[in-house]
Image 1 (tube, rainbow, N blue to C red):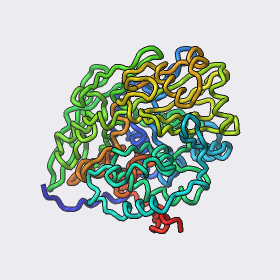
Image 2: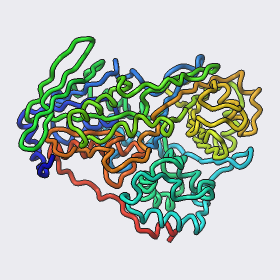
Image 3: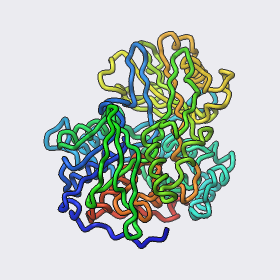
Image 4: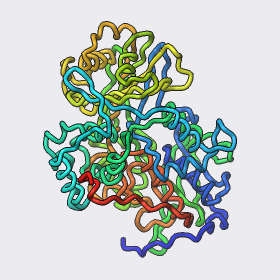
Length: 533
């Protein structure tokens, strides 16, 4: 359907007309949208409604368990990377711990008081430290990168990274760093690799620490998501939990389509929400953490794969529902939710009490408060291990250490444990890891608990796609709808960071509400960065 370019609302026009905002789905992008509506668009908090299927704000948190039964840390494997949009969001939310300060102040203080993460890579049965300023990128690798980034996204299309680079490149120190920082694998989207290079290669060249390896004091949920949720509740935002959305009604008005109504189901009761002309709808589409299955120290996770149509996750259901009403302007969710063989990864969380394993790696780091990332590039499972500053979770016992990792190729047979990672118990995964590091398993296994978790869509945002597979933040020919999350398309930006979801939320609210706040110009770097000049 042909449509004229939509003219955005004048600033505060929707607010002046008593408009409401309906935010559908659970994600950091949904929360960020609510913050921008209140703080930048001046919408009354009581007019902001967040509808999601969780029972409580703490329901479905990424880390569960305890020191006795073992922790289960469902890490998204995405770096925080405090870029412009993330900083702008955190600067809008008051600190819950320090009066007169913001969440950004808290995060900056936490980061300034701790050294940066150190990266180690595998060298035989040993691990060796990689210092950013000492990594040498050979001229052949540099020229390959230059040739690659000069290609257009249109020419890259659905191609994957290994279509452009050889085995020598994937064995290089540079790839070990970059793939660890951004969770990239050779079979992932060439477009995403190019975007990450254009965004962060300059920082990699100039800084004394690795981009993408920073973490909060504990993790994203406790340091960012829960504080923002509590802030919104205190402001008076209408958070409706245990609520699902269905039966979306779309009206055609002057060649533009508008959401006019949808139905909700809350505690078994059905209700119809009517969308008035000044109202807006923001929907969070897709979820990388949906459909995960948990194993135990002695049992592998179930490999049952649920279909998207089975309401595997509310955000996938929303995408399918909006797609049925709005057609191709909402992209193709099936490109991302059905390719489990390419998007599946397996995470594991190791809980250790009173053994020397943790101290062994702290000695490698030459500091007892460093955090460490270890890339085992010789592993058939493509294992990565992250040992964060302790404690990882609030109220963690002082005699317990928790670390987590993931395998990007869990379908392959292990180097030492001769079966696929997908078929392994937590204890077998830890055995494979220890043997890679030349550590006798016997001294560790009896004093540790490893919880594995299969994540069938964890790398789905990084899959190859066509230009039309991801919708724009403001879909074509729509008047009151924005979509947010890791599956929308923001030109030139890489989805491999948390900042991407927050940026999408900012774009959505500023355009729907007519906010014309001055933003810093995006970083632009010349090709000389890749030549080391």
